[in-house]
Length: 266
Image (cartoon, rainbow, N blue to C red; front, side):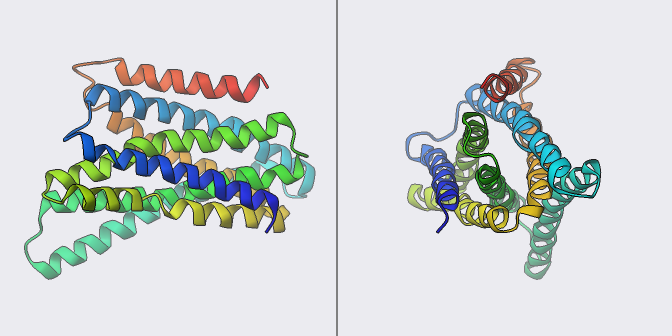
């Protein structure tokens, strides 16, 4: 197996581990500290937004200019939009399937529906997140392992891993409140991230053995990450905005600044 594919597998196993670590909070807490959770979600949002440009879109534009005859802006824009549409479509499919199941039962349970949708949406958007990590490591093949490119791949994995921790808790804790055992809640919570290693390997293989798709793949991952950050993480971290109006926003700014610093100073 290609060395870069192994790196991608190791990185996505780490991001899955952080999901499992977040899910494990169900063993110690009945509910997370809202301020800490909002700060962490905000920080993860800022990291993902910054990583989408400096670690994914900017390299995609450079690669497209160097290797493709098609205008770079067309390739990157198409990839970005496809990534966002992929995430949107995934959510729509899950919503449709759940509505059909409720119709068959005749008596939908709103609380169970919310938990199911949360678990499935997190599981689904972990697929493009795993692809993003795999693509970032696979792209190292064209950059000769420079410190800057390696750091870019690592920071993509770190950013995704950071936002996986609260996501694991966001699945396992509601399950516990609904009456599931701690063990069941943990197992379901960590399972939402197990798709990332498989997606990471696929992303790395595509880039390593199909180099022309690298610019599209990088921008695809960026589109998926932006949609997740803007549609899911930011609204979630702003729930207690009236009580703490700038707490989560501070996390977003700090996360963006940290990621920007890491990507531009090395």
